[in-house]
Amino acid sequence: MLNFILQSSATIATTAIADSIHQVPAVSGIQMAEAATETKISLISMVLKGGPIMYPLVILLIVSIYVLVERLIVTSKAARKTPGLTKSLQDFINQGNINNARNLCKTTNTPESLMLEQGVSRIGQPIQEIREALNKGGANEIAKLEKHLNVLNIIGRIAPMFGFIGTIFGVVKIFYDISLAKTVEIGVISEGLYQKMISSAGGLVVGVFAFVCYHWLNSRLDKLAHRMEDTQIEFLDMLNEPSK
Image (cartoon, rainbow, N blue to C red; front, side, top):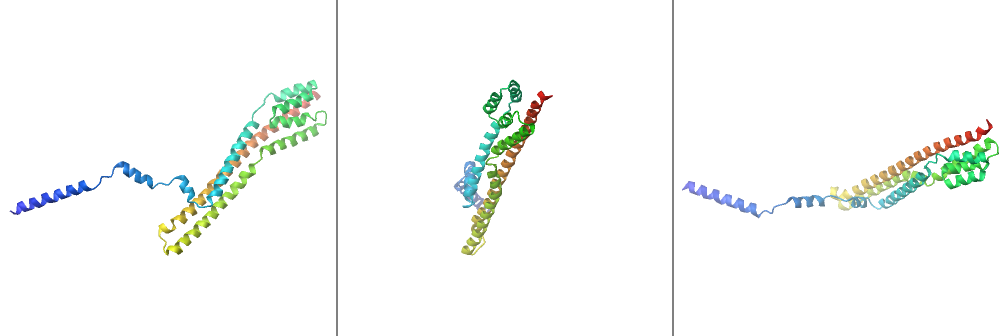
């Protein structure tokens, strides 16, 4: 009799457990993936959590990208080489066609040719004056290519300061939220922490980007300036050849 009662109890318990298992809703892999996706944060949402200081930082980033692209286009056109320019100028000068030599420089329309045009226009004057004209012409062309580069330099300096201002705003918000909630739970201070950290990171990212662009473009201009100096020396040597 006792064995029958124990067996009956075990059967009832097993049936109850099986029924409870069937009643529990199954969680599929898709539902788990959706739940995990809901916890992620998009880049735009993260930026917006940085507070109002992120708006000027976004503007500074757009300006930096614009200056970078615009200067890259200009410097790429300026860096194109004209290997036969000096030889063609020498032929015109030896023939006495100074006007044709000047027109060739103008139509070539590169920093090197425009610099040489200043020297060609002074042929017949002392070599020192020609050299000074070439130096001034080269400096003017490099100055044109350096246009807007100071904008990148300024952005690189002020963007981290904007991030620091956003950090201060975030700290103020943290203390304000604590004073309202009378507690320091993470849910209370999380919004201020987001604003503090994201604004700091945003300022540093924009500042580093602007500084990298500024120095990279300057390095390209330095290479072009060295090439223009070599062209100037070649032109002056060419003028000295007939006098030998």
